[in-house]
Length: 103
Image (tube, rainbow, N blue to C red; front, side):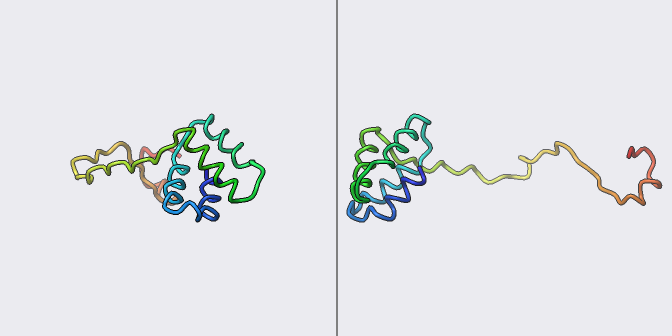
């Protein structure tokens, strides 16, 4: 997916406004089936421009879409934080002075 996006980013200027949109479509997470199809599309024999056009056609045929950004979570408040565990780190010389500490 990254290789396809990089190819379009470097050599897809002839696509105009579609170039950025196509790069975003390639940067979304997809199933192994779609990744395999795009890998095969990257191996397409032809000029760089023909390869970019082939990838654009492939993206349309596979129905690849841009992923929307997730909504951010609300800020964390103090009452959202709960102590789960703790650990005390003491120097080796202090272990002899502290009772009930297992080495």
